[in-house]
Image (cartoon, rainbow, N blue to C red; front, side):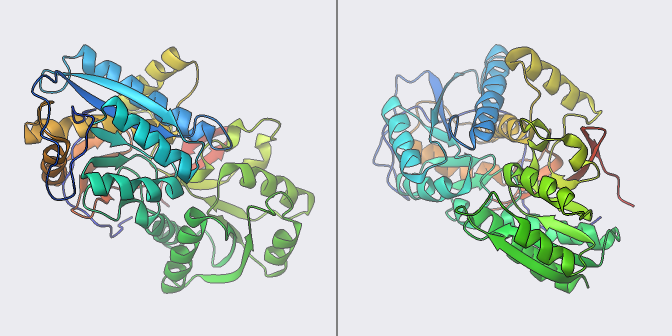
Length: 393
């Protein structure tokens, strides 16, 4: 399957960051660097408590694993990495506070934030400081709206259009229902682009039913409307918590369409009390599955499980890749820890478009000046209570 995405050049390596706590002003450096700096100080921000803790914890662990590997292998350009992660509970105000805490610590580069809305808030800060920011998983367009920010994952528009392309090109269904969260930028962004691309591909959206954060436990009305409209496949651009409820309630309503989701679906099989049989056959777009058979994935999964006692989800793989991409870009630009944050950022902007990498979340990944990655997606299907890579038909 071929898909048009924004591209440029990228490469995979690992963590690095600027060595000064102060931040440079946009377009120039008010900080002058620190001649005594001997380490790269990289910060991370994401939810390690609250409803989205599974994502932030995965990112925190993925970064830590990469940092430990890189440091053991000699660091970046011969310098070790210091790493600190702050919890933002997926809240914008707390995320900005976390950013300021990390600046006080001496952060030179940021891996984060994990979720979209906080990332939109924090990117205003990093842009003003001209600090390099690399989000593993924030998908909204505005999360990387400035030239200092890049992302590892697909954006909301690309997830929506790629999902529609896959459904159409593989003949999965012609009549599509959608259930989405109209109060969430992640969900609405994907939904809007999916609907546009679905029409262009000749798919009929027979029903598009919304819910909000204030009404995200009872989906009986949305399910019935999608069912009555004759949907053969239901697209779920939502997170796994709500998806688990929808699948259970659809089963009770006697509604059994094909189900197709996006990367927020990762974690569904780990929901406490959820009958994984209800997810059998569900497909979703993801850059990573721990069941992939390539050597790099299996090594990563084994190391992650040994270190953290858990199987990594895609957010951990995205974060791990982020650190190795940073390493590659820092080495490409010959950056050292004594440079100012602003000078580091300016060097990274160019280096990110000059590297290409094979990572856990994609092969031959590149980036453009807009900060967007170019890589092929993977679609997985739930079979026997596990994720399996779905081959194109």
